Structure formats: structure tokens, C-alpha cells
Image (cartoon, rainbow, N blue to C red):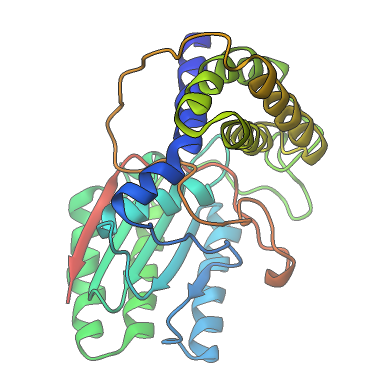
Length: 306
């Protein structure tokens, strides 16, 4: 278990450190917008009434069943295909309850004329790939072909809610009650903190200095460790402290040892992809909406076009 956590921490730190280089080499990736509600339309397609109706539908599902379904409409996902972008969004937003992982992302790339239902691992039994494909083909595609985007999304939400409702999920928390560890910023895991500082930085520091030089390499590692520390601890103060320590370590000691060679893992996306997003927890512009901090998206779901 500890070795697995160390491996995930190192992979994540290296992913953050080298994302700018990869983005330059492959072309800039589409940014991930902040998570501000159950419905985010960056294309201006949905009317205010349509958005409110769909938001109410998905909020009711979350209140009664606990699962989070989020709709995102973007113009395009290029240069990524829609599956890779959806996986990146789902993991960065952390849709679904922590410890349950009951999240679903419904993504529409309007200009690409593509759509995808991305399902967190905990719901892959309730919404297998073939079921997601049927929802796309029966609920979304025919309505989208008629430019009825609101109707297609509402119909898809209804079918997703029916499948989620049949799944044996833990009941949602009572109003005003925050499950331990979900958004409790006072919880701090010293084991993860030690992993970040003593394992991640020792590997990422020399690599970052080797590729980007002392100054920029230190900033990348410090920033990456700070972000990851916030993900694990939800404490801004501790995250800043971790980032500063990693920055200083890389600048002072990062060049004293040779970089460690690591194999390149598979997968087209990660939890900390390129793009700015402050929406892992809450947004003051969304009436207090927040992700559950959970969903682990492993590529389950289906894609389609119209």
C-alpha cells in the first residue's frame, strides 16, 4: 500500500513538472474550466432557463442519491480526442463523493460534433460502456441532430439517474453534515507529506534541473509539490510550506545527484492536466457548489457523434 502511494505521488509530481514541456511538444492542450456547478456551458448554447432546469435536475439527483453528474459543453477538445479530455476533466474535477467515487461527466464538444459519457470506476457496474453508448444513441444523438441540446442532455440525465438509482450506493449525507475527510481542511496526512518531500522531490528535483535549469526547475517542482500537497491535505498554508521547501531543496541540493531514470507509464491523461482550474472544491460563484473530491475515472464510458 505504501509503495503504491509512493509510486502515485512520484508519477503525479513528474507529470506536473513536465506538463509544460509536453504541451509545447504536442501543441497546447485545451484548458479545463473551473467547476462552478452541475452545468457548465462554454459555448453559450443553453439558455438561462435550460441551464437552470438541468441544474435543478442534477442537483436533485445528488441530494437524493449522493452521486454527482456534471454536464460540460465546450467548443472543441482538440488536440486531444474527446475521451482523453473527458478523463482529464473528470479526474481534475474529482466528481463524485470521496470514498465512493460515484461521479459521471457528460461532455459535449459542439464544434467537433462529438459527445461522451465518462463514468467513474464506482459506477461502471451501474453504467457499463454499452449502457452509456445506448444513452448517447437513444437520448442525445437524435435530439442533438435537431439542435435540441437541452432536451438531449435532460433525457440523458433522466436515464443516468434511473441507472444510478438502481445501484446500491451509500446514502447521501444529511444537509449541513460534512462526512469526515470530504472537505475537512483540518485533516492532514503526514505520511503523504513525507512521501512528497522525501521521495518525490529527490527524484523530480534533479530531473527538473536537468531539463529546465536550476531556476525554472525549482519553480516547477515547488509548484507541483504545492498543488499535490493541497490535493492531499486541503490546507493552503501547509501546501505553500511544502512548495517552498521543495523549491529550496531543488535549488540547493537538486543538482547534487544524477537524475533517476523512470519508465513512462501508459495512459492519455492524468489527474493534474494542463489548464487552470480552481474547482476541485467550491466556488463562490456557484452558490456553494463543490465537487465531492472523489471520482476515480479510469476510462469507462462511451463516445458518440451526431
